[in-house]
Amino acid sequence: MKNKKFLWGVATSAFQLEGSPAADWATWDRALKNRPEAADHYRLYREDLLLLKKLGVNAYRFSIEWSRIEPEEGRWDEAAVGHYRQIADTLAASGIEPMLTIHHFTHPAWFTKKYAWHTEESISRFLSFARKIIPRFKDVRYWVTFNEPYVLLLGGYIEGCMPPGVKDVRLAARALENILICHAGAYDLIHENNPSAMVSVAHNMAAVAPWRAWNPADRLVARAATRFYNHSLIDAFMSGVLVVRFPFKRAVEIPLPIKGKLDFFGVNYYTRVHMRCNPFKKMGVELRHRDIGGKGLTDMGWEIHPEGIRKVLSYASKLKVPIIITENGMATHDDRRKSEFLKLHIDELRRCIADGMDIRGYFYWSLMDNYEWAHGFDSRFGLYRVDFNTFKRMPTMAAEFYSNVIRSCGTSLRQGERN
Image (cartoon, rainbow, N blue to C red; front, side, top):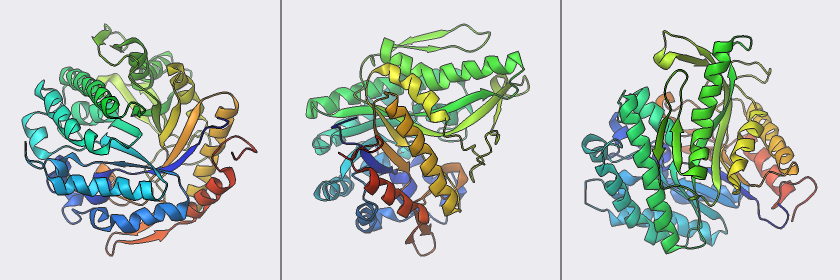
């Protein structure tokens, strides 16, 4: 990492901070009925971007809300495009590197109702949106095409707990294929507009362990889950073929035009999960979080397991491209624990870099408290606490801790190196 600027940032998503009346999620969760504007970031974004300077970050990951840009099919809202353009301009004027996410879970309601990702038409509709946006942000260097496509797949097409609410494995495979085709198309469009752009997906990765280490069936499902959830996307970017393999079932191979279409690899890492074979559960698998390491659970019930980040980054390093931690954070009302979470994970990253891993950045999730999908408004990930009645932002102890880390490390994460 010597002579390479390390990106110290925070990550956000548009819908989680600002809501959108035209989004599929707007009527999906009753928690949004009384707080449709979420943290009211659409109105308060100028003040919120000033918080970045107080933190001392040199990078900011944010997303564009498709449903604001195209609230009705074929009708484009130029004022909404201008809003996100203003965010990018404000960041540039402050010397903060923008990282722009095109798709972060949400869609216009018309897209989900009429198309959704399992239809062939979804590809042309998304790429139409991408062609509208990308030329307006050709000066942006860092791009994430899709945030956590496997989470969208599992939530939207297997569990049915997020839009479109389908429970069909066959349609899930088709949806994933279409999403990755769209990544390839967006990747090409971005490079047509900015040949030096750095483009990736943000892939959610988790450390996975057997529920009962002595049980062969539990070890089998843990290995299968690791291969699918963590490794299959990475392997597909290397080979151009997505291989889906589950125990006792024939592997499915899906050719995709994504081989080598990564300039860096974004990793979202939060936790470790323990898995066991359970024939009474969907797909014969059950998972839970257990405080095996003694570091506790977050308010989301997730195990704090910083050592797991080494496992997932070790496999991601096979891609031979730089790695950026595009999300890592903790939901808690206890600021002291949030600071400790930061320290444990940053220390682990420092050791990974010392061992030769090419890690170029770390983005904490999130700048401020926001709407946390099915968990509503009480999962406090933010470095800034939000009073959702007054929309007042208040710094936490963790914000001060993160600022001190950034000041002490400068543009490097190597021990004793600041340049």
